[in-house]
Length: 600
Image (tube, rainbow, N blue to C red; front, side, top):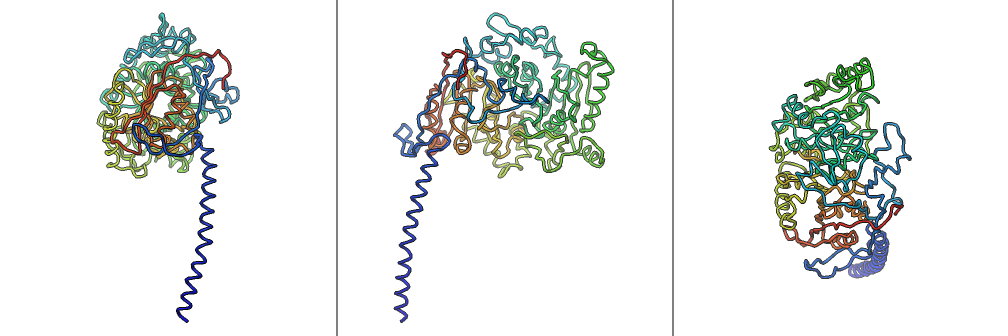
């Protein structure tokens, strides 16, 4: 009986296996079918995943994409900035100039065309000569020349714009202006101050002068119809980005810049609860400096030229002083038209303010992340530096250039981040940069000045290229781990960005774009066709792109690049990895064949 039961049990098990097998086959078939539907609607129009054709690198698997083609945009799109488009300004409010903030077009309204250069466009004048002159046809804006020529911003001479180094508050030259500033702030001379931001930058003369003094400045100005301040800065080879302090935070982490500057930038610092100054306070490193020249500084001697009264300017200055004190700023130095305040280097002042229930502005509560800065609304509260950070203040930060390779304290806030990871990343990028220079000898020459690392981690590429005549805008995805504070702590500059949208810059502003796995990490979230179009928009004609990607994406990227009129070649990585490849691409110079008309 025992054996009979065992035999029956085995038979019963066997009868169960068959339906399960059939069910499994049906599920697999359904999964394959649904997967095919999904892939057919993939962001980069996947038609099939199959064996790639044999190539010099013997890539086994690649993503095969449907052929794409791009028409030319009409010539009136030569300075097109999709997320700050003056054509759309009427749709948005004028309160606090919100229409000048980022307003990106919806998917159905995105342009799928190649932005042309202006007629007569020439390869930009090379650095360092470009700091003082640029081709008029590359930025053909007469308005700024007529309006600002008396202030020595620039002047047109023949086929060129000349930049004498003047400004509204320094008509006799920016160098003398900065010399006085250095006398007031000795920390500008010894490597203590390395990073700065210039709000309302004009043509970035201040930031350009500071480059010669070892200070790296982000020049910030909004998109406008006539002045094209940021475009002039980038054409000259000076770091700049489109932006405005309005209703949203600037795309930078807290405690980042060593110094902030406003030279008659016309920002109403004391209005709207002081939110504009509170934002400067947020992004300024503890112990950092805020420099103001222009109204209401030196109102006693200047008020007559400001179309105001001395009483009004005195009141404005007192309000400003009171607001700064409430944020734990102290007057550091003042002479002539320049006033300097220093942000508290520690939390003692903030602790005193927190004991006063009637204090304004109040401390921000813990619900607002200090580094949240991508479409994050401004709030009328003080972001107090974390008490656990002991070495982030300016005095405790190593001086430049030592800080470049010193492990920043804030790497411990990055998941998995530590000193060993940082040192490994630093070493890795030295090796990679050396390999890049073999593949693209233009790196390190005067052919490449403006560089963007489109998805950096710790700024490793920028650090590896620090001795070359170029600067790097380090971009950290707003969806990635928050590593941008580490970039700033190293004495480098960067910004948050979401590559599903257009970047805050004018067309033709970068000589080299670097991508490291961006398509792999973002392909399920962003339409890669539009990312490539955006790369084409911001890349200068004859500029380069180094695209480091998985073998799976390499061929498909190359096929899209061909439709962008780029020439690309595939290369091995420094480790000759079979899973990762390099595309070395160059954008061709072409001129528009379209008249000025709406082009989709």
